[in-house]
Length: 470
Length: 148
Image (cartoon, rainbow over all chains, first blue to last red):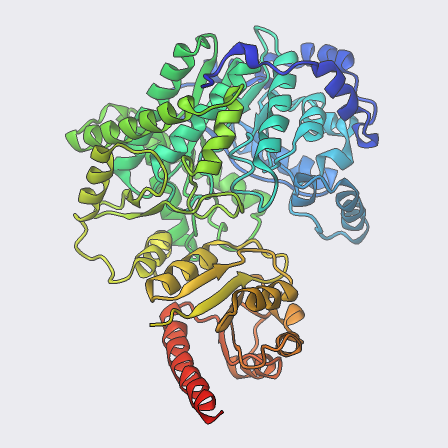
């Protein structure tokens, strides 16, 4: 039995760091020089300072990454001018998979031929010295958005560049993003990232970590997402991280979104406190619809506006926005800027709605909360010398099961679909340890749906395509 | 009744897993025994798996259009392993660019596929065809067994 504990703090970090920083692409990063550089960054570059100044509406963050420095600089300026509160740096998929040489070659081709051969900014190829210039004069936090199971070098270069919000985690950046990266290694590599974040943190200017709650973004039951968010917060806290955001993706159900936010906020605080991590500041991030998006721009705009209302309703600290071009490809900077403007407009108009409560939301929150508690209780009971080992075992046993994750070691036994309200229900929990009562409640709520298709797969197809009806 | 064994998987460097998972559920719900190779497969993964599990049919899918590149000598691989009679199906978004249905069907038929479902999202069509083809196929097998 292994509960989260500071005694699980990674040992010999200096030795591990020397090995990572010996990589030729680390380009001479020196932890002491980086510490000095971070101490001279404007305080507003740190999420803790920014979040402390948040007004009545959630902060807004778009997504975006281009291969060349010039294009990324233009995007950064366009997004900042549009009023985005957090500036994204989305990394290309070769760098995410540690293929730095390929990324570098394709960066050169992009520069020479003037067209994009990468789907993001190859941060490791550009290096920290150049990337610092990307953000000179900026007084907003920059967020590293990627999907990297082994992000040790990437995170080192990011922090050295002044990017002090690092998204990811050993679960949320492995299961949905990789088919075969060993889960135990991913957990260990993210311990490294968390530890390095903690090493570079000061009380006033902590390096901020954020987990990615949408996961596969396909019919993930809230209890699974929340359990994983809490686990990643605990794993980060073990390594000394003191500023952390949990997140979740729009579920497609109004009721479930509000209930999920309540439970996620309440239980992540409770588990951190119970494990002795009451020094961790927690924030809540809401992702606008991450599933299949409508092709028609007016419908996409409507979906984005609706999600903006919900972001305000759940009083998210930050909302990650989509654009009307989501179904069509990588959005241009103008389209991205427009999305920021629209979302802020809607949130301003409908602000203050976070007082809405209802018995239906309360019942949903009670059910989700009970499920999260029983999943986490079962994982805490698993054998292992440290918490991460119990987490790893939970995947082997199917206690944690992420629907539609491409990873070969995901159990794939849990089957979920939507009920009459559009809420995601667990038809069959597989090996996920729910109480009999919760499992029966899930099934009975599912029966509320009158228009269920005759075959499970037909229903799943309809549920996955919820937002793309013609 | 004998349960038919079907090998399914996504071909090429394609990690689109949602359709693959739905396909597995759909085939299982229709009574098949499914061996799912999941994502990022080479052609030999399909033929080897078919040999190992003594499959009745193989269903290859491609979402990112890599199908044309990977499937060109598909039937030959199975014949070389003594699986000349196996049913070969392909579906998804199997070719890059916009080309007419009959052209796509002709290309993949030449590669040795029995049925081709390009941009036809309704899996039930393929399942009905599969049941029909297998019924006919197993009747043929019974006849040839009786002839010996």
